[in-house]
Amino acid sequence: MARYTSVARTLHWAIAILILLNLFFGFAHDALPKEWAVMPVHKSIGLTVLALTLVRIVWRLTHPAPPLPAAMPAWEKGAAHATHVLFYALMLILPLSGWIMSSAGTRPLNWFFLFDVPKFGVGKEDAIVGLSRGAHELLPWLWVALILLHVGAALRHHFMLKDDVLRRML
Image (cartoon, one colour):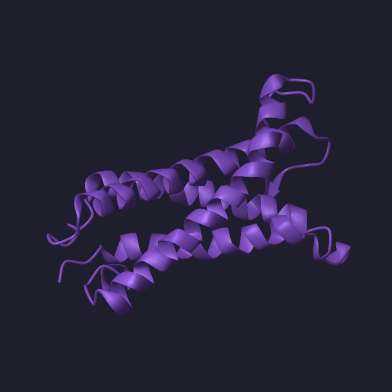
């Protein structure tokens, strides 16, 4: 069975856990206790996802994914490819949009309270900030839908089709 490299698997699962945690923090931050400092942690996780995604892209470009099963229909291969492209786009766009929004604010931006992160030179009135805010509010819902599709497809391959698609990433 062809598998992803251990680096690819580690990056996949680390980023997946961070994304799920950040989606939770993003959706539930108003309901969580203020003393949890959810938003600074949410921002730190987002910056971590962005950095790990850049590493993951370089790794993926230099270490191709194992081939999908030959028996998989072309439409399904196309759907898998499109879903992965959208995942990579969201792993870049959402953290960048959050960084842009934070850059327009007055609060400091730091990484897990350890060091300051430079801000972009934008103000609240800049169009890019408004665009970033809109993206940051809407795109997480697309991400949830894609995650459900991705997990559902992986489980379908494992339990119904009984192929190695899921095991390649385990």
